[in-house]
Every structure is written in C-alpha cells, then in structure tokens.
Length: 248
Image (cartoon, rainbow, N blue to C red; front, side, top):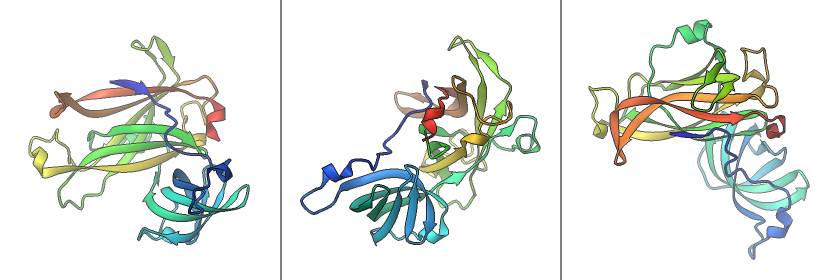
C-alpha cells in the first residue's frame, strides 16, 4: 500500500463565500478546517480568517483547547477575514515535533503499535495527519505519538532519493490486534489528529525542508485478507514532494 502523502483534504477556503448564500441566510454549510483557538469565543483558521462563534451545537469548551479541527456553518461575513459561525463539531489536535533517530526521545521508544494514516496535508504552517488506531475497550491507557527522522535513503520502490525520511511511532501500551493476548472484539478503532510544525520537520538538515525535497513517512499497520484485519503488521510508506507554497 503506497499513497501520496500530502493530500489536500476537505479544508475549504472562506474566499468567495458570498456567492454561496442559502435561502436561510447561511453563507456556507459544514466548512471543515484546522485552526488555533484565540479565546473561548473565536478561532483563527489556517486560512487566516478570524471566526467568531455566535452559536454552538457541540459541548466541547474551546478555552480548554489550543489547535483544533472544526466543522462549522458560516453565517455572516463581517469583512474579508472576519466571519461569524455556528460551531458544529470540534476535535483537539496534538502538536508534535520531529526528533532525530539519535535523540534520547527516539531511543526511549518502548512500543511500536500500528497506526493508520488516513489523510495528510499542509495548512497553517503545519503538516497535518489524520490517524486511526486501536484502543482496548474501556481502557484508560494514554496513547502518544513520536515522529522520528532517520538518515536520508535511496528508495528502491520509488527509484528516488528520500531527503526527509520520517517514521511515525504509536505508543499505546500494546493495545493492538498484533498483541496475541487481545482479540479484535477486545478493541475498537478511534481517530486522532496531529500537526507537525513545518519549520521543525527536517531536523536532519537543520530546519525547514527545501522545495523539491522528497518526504517519506513510514509507519506500521495491520495487513488484510479479504478486508479482515490480520494479526501481522507491515511497514507502509507514503510520499510527498515538499513545496513551500503548500504552507499557506
């Protein structure tokens, strides 16, 4: 399973919404985007717009969050970069930074539980990853992620030099179908979102990747047989060519 790493997912622009007005006055339904919480009542989107929450359909408190993925209806345009919204859904996004293979953090990895990368894209100065993984039913075990950069390599499958060679680790205390002590019925699959600051994405070369660099992201995930999850795992890779214009 190989796929393009940097997919520009359903993160929709606020530009030109005045042409999308519905009969009920809503400018746009179900806008989905990443952003930063400014305060309990407003969000700075990755598009650079300030979104004031005038109505809320979810129970999460914004003032307990920093970076988020959110879904909203855009109800009013105040200016080119100021809007009023009805907040419908909000999900916390964990920020992580890449560390070198030689770092103490990488050396301290104790688990290598599988994780699936369902989509990934650049926005707001971040590489954003939508992840999926197993957790044990009723478990309180904290799950964490570590993004490690190894030395550049020549990728035989792609016949290209990999400039930024990344490996995503999932530490979940062995909560995985790869654990022979657990049955699939003991587990359920959940989603999570992480963002990696682009300026810290390439510590091997000392900072931000340069245009044209090939990035590779590896991670362990389960194998399948006729869509059934297998206990065995394998390494999957995704690829993307860095382009500075993707940061916006």
